[in-house]
Length: 127
Image (cartoon, rainbow, N blue to C red; front, side, top):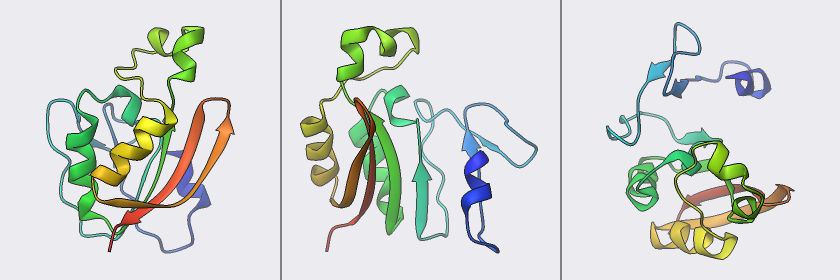
């Protein structure tokens, strides 16, 4: 929820998580329920996709947004055992994850490594 401090003034911030982080959090288990529909153009999804059973299905639901910033930790973390201890449910390589984004109808606008194995992506719906 700390990302809200980095957003421009007057930005509508809707926090969603699997547990209530504050009184305004929309609590949802994305492995059990679909992503709610939001009437907004932009979304930020950090530290989420590693916990998702069906990543392609969730990516299809993200088509409701024009632009998305998201993070993903690639399978490089599996070698160290980090993912297994965090209950992460998938292990895509960077190449596989980028292919999933494209197959879901997104264009990668910008990408960068935050640290070994962890990538940050800015994507938008493909034209």
